[in-house]
Length: 472
Image 1 (cartoon, rainbow, N blue to C red):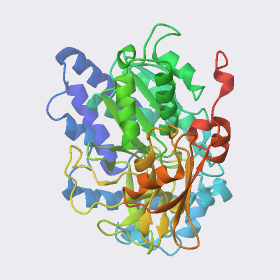
Image 2: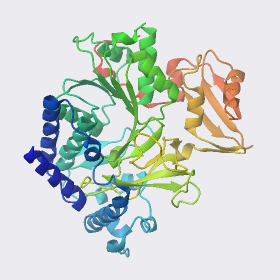
Image 3: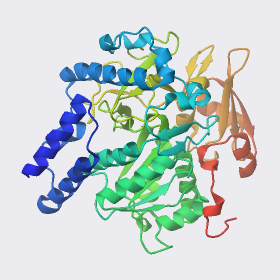
Image 4: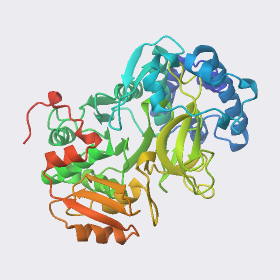
């Protein structure tokens, strides 16, 4: 127990002082937690404080944030050619969360145009984004990062009880998401769980794996993008599967807007107790967020600084305003190809008041509402992609996942195109109007292949070479 306490102090000090963490010490803390669980059945009353880290106390957070930002920008100015130019003339030692807004945001286009100028240490592995929202971005990672991130995540999930020894995780992520898949595999190894990297194969095959038909072992955890998980729901229902035929305890989604309807469909179809809607990006790892029971998105403040920039002014968004998530991962969590004030393009709404939920100690915003370029400013007001998805997703007669496209026409009115062979334009219009969305609707009776071509989603990144047999 004394050795565990010493390791906890050393890791906590490294986090506060901004020193490189000892990866093996973090891994041993994971092992310590597992041994404690095995011997005593619980981790004690102070587990939440340990899980939330040194940034959990609001009174201490601002000072720690300022020091972390100063440490991060000093390193960037010294090592990154891109940021050496961008930070020229900035008083780095006086930088605070209030003055950070004087530095221009970094965008995806910057990473695409000048990738080598972001490198700050020796690269070990290159990964890339899936490219579903445009040209993929290549991200270089160091060996330290590849070992540290899974250790930190493993410690967090063990402390919170999200993954247990003996669990089996089925990973239905695209193989393009190298870093995310590698993280999941390593987290399972550290926790003593097994994993099965299935990829995005035809959904009927994934359902077979969930049923344990391939090797007799049913997964207890499932991770994937919402649109692919929606296809699993459709496949499981068409096969006549019952919830008690699966062994899933938890399902974790991310990367797309996930509706209430899909959340409930996953629970009802697979019998999972927990359906989590997570936030993460390859460019920002290991910074991430999770959704609470009140559907707030809580982004971990320990490993990065998060801003919400008003869509109209670019300044910090006031209470209840729409803005783009902009994130700065701190050193020493990000060292090889770090970014400063990275504009994710994801739109959220700031909370109008304090969060009142089980994760209230962690800063919160609304769930992701869509990409900034997809926010619809109509003559009647703003409509977000989530507004449309929440109304239509899971409606009988519409495909699951919902395939659609929306845009504002010259008259200021919203136009929505939807793929469906069963519902009429009048029926879809009525559904939207019931939620105060006035739109001109076009329904296209497309087959599945044509609908996927017209309205692509992440679930369409199928890896057919991974399949064991063809599916009609």
